[in-house]
Amino acid sequence: MHNFDVIVVGAGLVGRLFAIGLAKRGLTVASIDHEAPDALLNAAHDGRTTAVTLGSKRLFDSYGLWDAIAPYAQPIHQIRVFESGSPWTLDYDAKDISNDPMGYIVENTPIRESLYAQTHDLLTVFSPDSVQSLNRTDDRATVVLTSGKTLNAPLIIAADGRHSKLRKHTSITIKTNDYDQNALVAHIHHEKPHNDTAFEIFQKDGPLAVLPLLPDAATGQYKSGLVWCKPRAFDWAAHDDKSLNGMFEKIFPYYGAITFLPKRWIYPLSYTKVSSMIDNRMALIGDAAHVVHPIAGQGVNLGWRDAAILIDELAKAKSQGIDLGCPFLLKRYDGQRKFDRLSVLWATDGISHLYHSQLPPVRFARNAAFAVLNHIKPFKRAVMRRAMGIS
Image 1 (cartoon, rainbow, N blue to C red):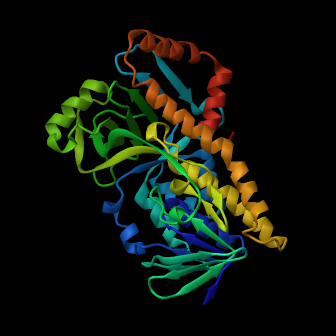
Image 2 (cartoon, helix red, strand yellow; image 1 turned 135 degrees about the horizontal axis):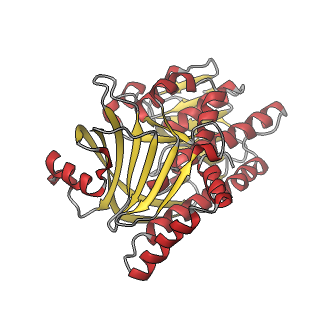
Image 3 (cartoon, one colour; image 1 turned 45 degrees about the vertical axis):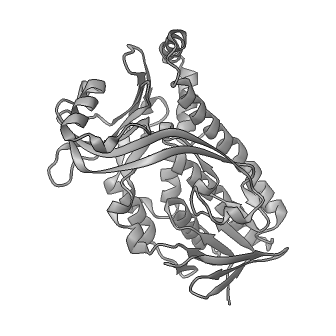
């Protein structure tokens, strides 16, 4: 029998940060993941790039994690949003807020490496391992692992992703929406510089994000990441490099000659909203609590904000001798996360549906809105602070 303050199931980008943060704040933590750390660190495991907001960067900084990520982080100083074929754009500039970038684009592998390079005496890792059974009473959560070990804690955290097995043990209900889209994630080399600018281009069949990356370490060539969404019926695998180059340059001719790099990943897109982020002796964080369209790059940042709030609540409770899984504390966490969680879910879902319509009056209205909003500084600053995670 092993006793801990908190059991965390799932050791991805959110779960691992949460476990490290708790340990650094003085709590004993069990971290469980079905995959071995070596597998999670394999670059082929996850080809995505992450838009790390300024708020998330500051969270990593507070736990001594950012210094290892910084050499791989491309700052975003400007964001330009427009609809394909429209002359109007919505432009954001970091200088309107502060001297800091709005965020950073980082490939997921360096983030994982930073998280797994951190160890702590109060953090015990059980991986590869998984939960075979879970029992929750009024005062404890007990899990039996496939390895045969039994773990006890007053609180268990579901950080095990969008298809959370732990969540299925609860009374929490979910609402899901399949966008019937797949996102192609790829990297390109290009002839012209990106000037620290990220682009979001809305098209009738789905958005395209062009995200600045650091120059290629081996060749020095300019490099960007793409998140390119199209209907699921579109067969990405049927298009070779020449075909992809032609399609991309037709939409985005601003970088000169481009070359798609060999590795590509395809991810299905969906939306998940939970009825609650808590249950008896359990709290949800990250994708177990919400899945959003990648249209604004907020998904993992939303999960990191879950982690930051819950780490603070649990550290305060521990210092005051309060039961870490008591209903009052969990309800407080759920309440603190409600507005942020729902507003991001509604905004990303709403934008996705808004740009699905191709009716001429709708197209005109949304493009005219870009032209107007681009000149309303208070609005733009408010949107920027929200997107940067510092509102």
